[in-house]
Image 1 (cartoon, rainbow, N blue to C red):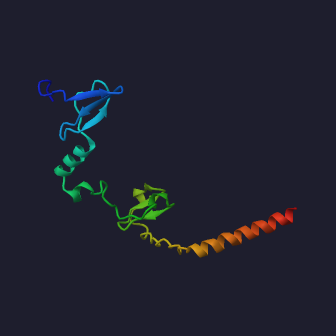
Image 2: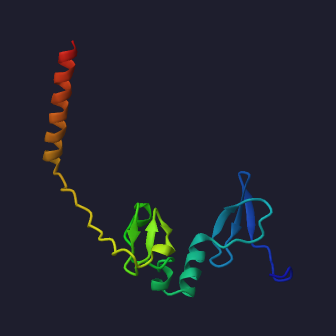
Image 3: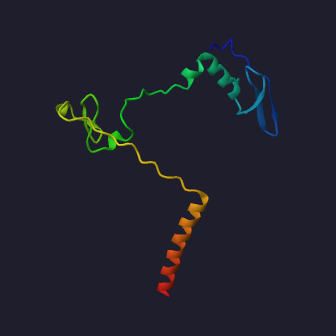
Length: 136
């Protein structure tokens, strides 16, 4: 931006704090000394959304590889193309020599109700109580 186009927005100082108008909506915001112009958060978001469509705005930055979560922590992982990885490092010499790794789906834990949680905690409390009595 050239120096001629920059104009200082309306501002005032109240209780030692400087307030300056937003360039777009002219709403006053707190600023530091020496600030010439600002664009508030609302106007920034509105302008950002105008530039990109919503589906593109929330689109994942990294494309999915098709590998399971934590594949790079496995001792050995072979993807569907035959690439072999040892602890996340590709082994090009071994490509196509092994069968693809079968990934088991994660077991889902049963969600306990409030009563079941209470019973579980009561059992552990009773065990601790017995151990305390035995020590005395």
